[in-house]
Image (cartoon, rainbow, N blue to C red; front, side, top):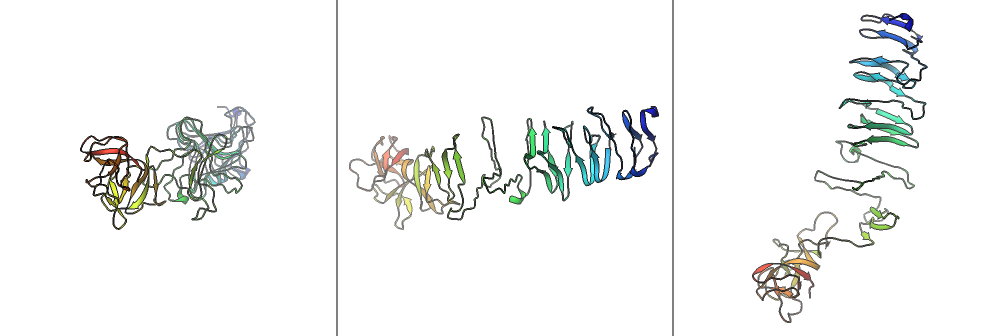
Length: 414
């Protein structure tokens, strides 16, 4: 190689051949490369008042660089100081190697671009498991981005942005997106945490704006739900909290559901009341009330009111103290606390359709027959003609030819 091709050409063994100090240690201009230097440890080692190494190129061709460092296994460019490496140009800093660019100091790496749609710092990783840009911080910020888009990460198979530290990824913007994540087939933004409660949430969104501020907005354009929430542990799936008191005042709705034209369709108010402008639908078929009962009762049992007011099995034909039927799958349950279960109670079907244990001891049961208690404990039978008042528990919706079985009953206590 001719020395006419470069400003300074230097090779050395263990130490640099040329060691220069000053305001600017090396300033070199060349048609292709200002300085080309090889060394077993350092190509260029320099200290200066302002910059250790200053490289400049006036070429606008993509791929050119003021300082170009290449290493097969260590650091292409290594800078330590207030700004470890500071680069301006078509590509501010370009690094290839085991570590493309590594910066230590007050600001490890600073990237700035003055071009429209330019990039301050760009990291590319070609191999699986590799990292385009990685920021780690013991107490500070791993990666911090400010601008219309603070940090933008794009990945076809891996993570668009991965951050570790006190703030893994921190993005701040005055008008655009603080953090933007995009992925062709994976997760745009993946949040993971092993912390506990609010301070350890995998994803924490907060908006302090008191005038219609919004912490999270989810939009979807597919044939699936906009949000899928799953708990693989033993806790609940969704926890809602507003600023209301225990009486349900002082806070707005927990849930407000509207249609395309913003017309209210469904609400869960601050005091826990559910409202719908079209009603509620369920495959369950009866309305039940939780009432105190003795132990050992089963769904479908015919129940009577015991001497102490608790529910017990019916025990005789045409029992006047009959109360109804133990509900199998009630669609609405009264007397149930908001949290936990009502102790020592069972759901008694008050109205609707409910399965009931029946006996054909008073003849085959046909749909429409009135049913009363039978001699078989907890079972109903056909009432026959003119049953005593207060003994009828409902009308049969099914039939029973002989023996015992379970049929459907339209509960109408009379």
